[in-house]
Amino acid sequence: MQYSSELIQTMRHALETVMASVPAHQSVFGLKAAVAECILNAAAHGHTSYDGLVTVASDQVQTIISMLT
Image (cartoon, rainbow, N blue to C red):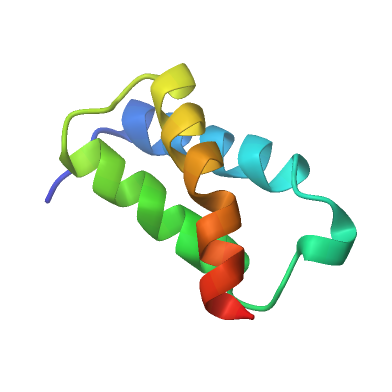
């Protein structure tokens, strides 16, 4: 799938925002990659706003951490 450079910047910004909200003791190996994948999937399903991407990814962080630990 092709994404515009603007959307890629939005996705990167959303990823950094979500990762900044994760406490250091919960930041497990692979978390950033899994959150990035979550954001990519959300974008592929039409969530292209910064707020929408942050919300979708933030809602999945605890589930992702549970799967990785």
